[in-house]
Length: 398
Image (cartoon, rainbow, N blue to C red; front, side, top):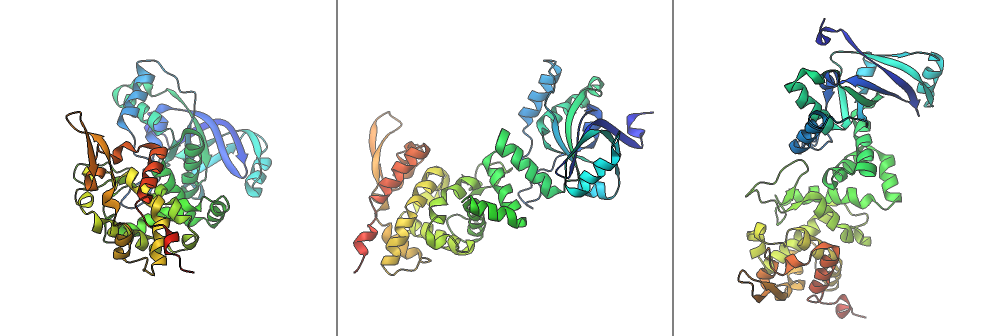
C-alpha cells in the first residue's frame, strides 16, 4: 500500500502542553511534510496571509545543500495544525501516559510534559510558519528523485492555533530571532493590532503605537489624489520599470515618526494626518514640480527626501499656524517652502568634474541629495532644508 492510500497519518514524539497550547516535537518523513504542507503567503491585493513570497534562489540553495553537500536539518520547521481541523476532530491526540494530566493542562491553560502521537486524515494541512525555504528545497528534491522521501524532517508542531495566532507566532519568531524584512513585519503588526485590543494597549504603553498609526496614515494617503498616489511599494510586490513606485511603504511609514510624535497628531485620525501630508507635499510640488513629474529620476520621493522633509514638517506646521494658515491648504506650505529650490551643492558630473547643482537638479538621482545617505546624512539634509525655512520664532506675536 502506498503512503498516499493511507487513511490517516501518524507522527509520534515528545508531547507537551505549554500554557494550554498543545505541542509535539517530532520527526516526519519528507514525503509526509511535502504532501501536507501549506504556506500562507501574504497577498497585497487582499491583505490575506502573512508570509513573504518564497525566494527561488534560497529554495535552490537549500536543495543543493541537502543533495550535493549531504547536509542535515537539525533545526525544526515550525508547523501548525489549525484550530478548525482540531475542532472538526480530523486530528486525534494519543497520550502514552497520564491522559488526565494532559487534559487538565489543556482545559486550565497549564503546563504538561509527556510523550504521545497525533493521527490526522489526508486532507489536513500542516501550515509552515517558519522554514518555508528549507521545506521548499526538499520539495524540489522530491520532484526530482525518490531517495529523499524518507528523509527525516524535524518539526515543532503546534496544535490548534487559529490563523491570527499563527501569524503572531510567525511575527514573534522572525522579529525577535531571524528578523523578517521590516516591510512585512510592520504590516503584520498593524494587522494584528486591528484585531487585538490588548496588543494596541501594549504598543501604546511601550510608545510603539506610532508604527500602526503610521501604516494607517499611509493607507489613507494612498486614497487621496496627490503626489503620493501610486508611489508606495507593497510587501511581496516586485518593483517593475515604469510602475511609478518610488519608496517601500515601511520606509515612508518610518519617516513619519517625527510628525506622529507631535502633540497635535498624537490622537488625530489617520485621515486628518494624511490630508495634512497631502497638502504639504502638494505645496512642495507647487514650488518645484519637476521632481514629481519624473519621480523615478529624483530622490525627492525616495528615502532621503521623505525622511528629511518629514523631519522639518513640524517646523513648517508651526510657521503655517503662526501665519494663520490652514493645515490642509497646499498654498500655505508653498509659501513656507518657497526657498526650497535655492538649495545647492557640488556633485561630480559624467566628465568627473565638480559642478554646482541647485533647484530640481539638487534632487536628481546621483546628484547632491543622493550623497546624504544613512541616518546621519539625512539628518544633515534636514538641517540644510531648515536653513531655508522661516523660524517659527520670527512669527510669534506677543
